[in-house]
Length: 312
Image 1 (cartoon, rainbow, N blue to C red):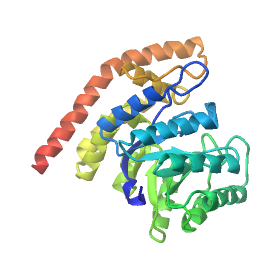
Image 2 (tube, one colour; image 1 turned 135 degrees about the vertical axis):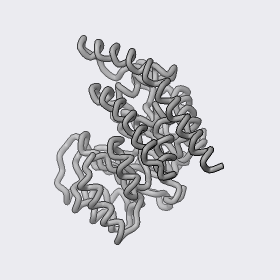
Image 3 (cartoon, rainbow, N blue to C red; image 1 turned 90 degrees about the horizontal axis):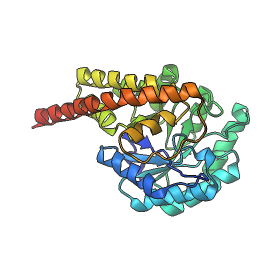
């Protein structure tokens, strides 16, 4: 996989599981096929949306291998770990299984200084298998925040092909765009709310959890943006924000799993028990999504048809 292949709409897959937190690989492939048929360019396995923290290293490797063997689109393998050794072991296994790129976050749970994070990530780059694009993953909601200066140094080092930024910070996006004028790298948005605005201002694409549930919507937005149809892109972005208002009320990635199940897809079991208020909210969300989803899928299809007619 070349860095030039990493752009447009990509999606991190949830990892369906049964009792005992063993990945359901058949269900994982069904979700992959659904996303690909919806038009996504690539998938990420073993990322935050995939709830990697719940699974053993062996099961994480099995999930990556299952997706890469299916090989319908490029697979970005999430190799985040609390230790450098663990991240490197995952990287070796993922590349051996055929992963096209590696996504590495800072070590999580324990707090580290920016200097420590810089050292961890540079050592990861030095020890990772050669010839595979390495993507930094900034997601401060769940792990150590990579400050702007640290990202500047890491991306200027030449050790990393690019970055998935899930910080949700527009100021950081502007800083990264300025850095790209001096050092070329792939810039992927991990926050769906910033995707349309950032794509119009030069971001290479998105790694969108919502695209695993609503590939039609995100791909329709992408096509509208590339065609310069700001009106249509804005309308679809509004629909995306309606969805986000709901799913952000649940612990990640429960809202996505609830929506997948409503679309008849195998989302797997919930990862933890829910209280009464959360269960009532889930019932309300299901009812809302059941009516909302067909309308939005139709709107996205109409956008695609209109664009095709213009090209013709």
